[in-house]
Image (cartoon, rainbow, N blue to C red; front, side):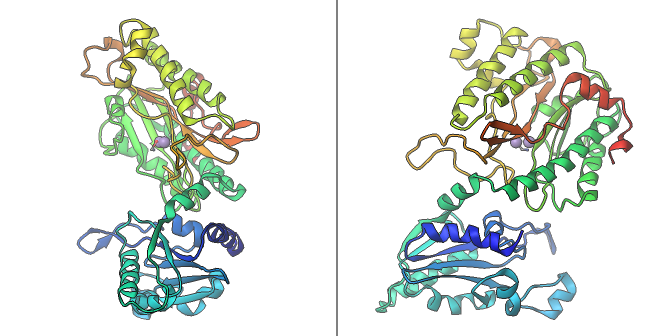
Length: 440
Ligand code: GLY
Ligand code: MN
Ligand code: MN
């Protein structure tokens, strides 16, 4: 994306500020063990406002009644370090390359900050964060204040995230395009996994083909840890070990999605390991699928997440009642929320730069934020039936089903951005019968 688009986003933040400085920290490297590090992934708010992907930066958006300016602290060039771990942009060219007003060496943060913060009355920052650079900024503000200098210095601390996250909730056309691209790769990966799975394979073999396709297609990161869960493992919601054998007669739940240019995709499909759903598996699967399709169809501007949550509970409780998974009257199942034992989570979440996008569900008064054009959310109804739960009829024990798609709210209602990924019993069985190499 061009610098001017990042500038537009920063300008929108600045418009909402009165006299003050907004501070947004980048991510930093994290140690995995001893001297090896986890792969670096930029902090989403920082990326959203800069498009810059180096660690150890601090962005300053400064505004008073006369003017606004944008400053960046970043790592200075260092030939020795660059030889070992890669190139750095450096201070000299940062303003020109990134379209900013001023750039400074992050090593000089404590020294340079007092002059930059003087004259402003508020700091806008993530007040919950323990980030080192934000802590230094708070310390500098405090020192300016206690020095009793005649200059105004920041004494007001305002939670910046509330402002930024509201802005990130409605996606720009560019952002929707990135998510569509991520989904086109994720589509291939899910189809390949359906075609590849055979009894006796290990869950991690399927994980490998999925992540191979993500990488081969140019995705830099997985949007989250891939879940490949055979049989009863699907009933562990965040199962990421992916270490067991896939058995004939079991289902395999895959929750995996890649990132494209920092934008996520988040897809779950549930597939029979031997290519054919059994009767009880099909009955349960089609119940969840029918619920999912009805929920998706009810999405349009003005509808609330609470409403579709209630709808999902009603529909999935109906499936559990109709298949006698929970005994007793439908009224009792609803009244006592008995369905929660097997459908314990929400119907979905916002998605964007983060798979669980950090956007609000309620406004500052506690009112539900209603769906509006440009918002993207997942719809992921599920039923989890643990193998050791003797209350469940035997033929359903050990089955876990989740079906997850990524939905854009638009002026007509909705667009299912992941509608290319097959999900009917017939279509899944059709792909299972094909050669996975067709999808590579
Ligand atoms: N993949 C995480 C989720 O579905 O929320
Ligand atoms: Mn999800
Ligand atoms: Mn998911």
